[in-house]
Amino acid sequence: MSNGDIFVGEVIGTAILILFGAGVCAAVTLRYSKARASGWVVIAFGWGFGVLAGAYTAAPLSGGQLNPAVTIGIAIDTGKWGKVWVYLLGQFVGAMLGAVLAYLVYLAQFQANVRKEGTTEGTADEPVPTLGIFSTVPEIQNPVANLITEIIATIALVLPILAFGLTKGLGESGTTVLIVSLLVVGIGLSLGGPTGYAINPARDLGPRIVHTFLPIPNKGTSDWGYAWIPVIGPLIGGALAGAVYNAAF
Image (tube, rainbow, N blue to C red; front, side):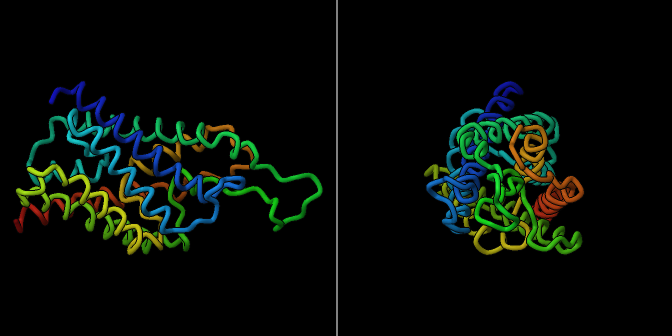
């Protein structure tokens, strides 16, 4: 694969991933959305389908890694680092692009995120916080606990992905991406409750940057004090998964 193919593939695939993921979060969160308050299960499946669509689309060009934690895990296992920077650059650019596209899809809903004149604090007309549409927001801010959650959840993603490569039938049948997307759904349902399961530094940091600059009324904070955890945690988890896989398999 050429550097150009890898970059384009990762940009397109990661943009699709974030379009689906931020899109389902917007659908569930924003006022005047037909899917509002439809719940965590819907969000988990939306992100899983985002992985499915993005990875299958990018696979012919770049292999569809779409996640710096996966890229680092593979590099640690194989010892091949030459193209890692191309993957990471494409993933971060694609994540920002996907966040902008999701914003445009729900543009009217974002513009309606304004407190109506004469309403009081805590009423149904209070502006909806928007950061959780783009990036992860922990239910309890505890840096140590949040970091541990992201490390473990990312190991639970990357180690199986590496092991799937040993299952010859999955690769031959073309169902590896489908299995990975179901794995992401499972991680969301089982491990996503504490932090919102970033498990992907590009998925969190790229959209957080976009959230900072988008002209969303009453958008609230981008919480940059927390932003290092969904970046460092998944990178550590991906590295540990690559090391464990290399040592044990």
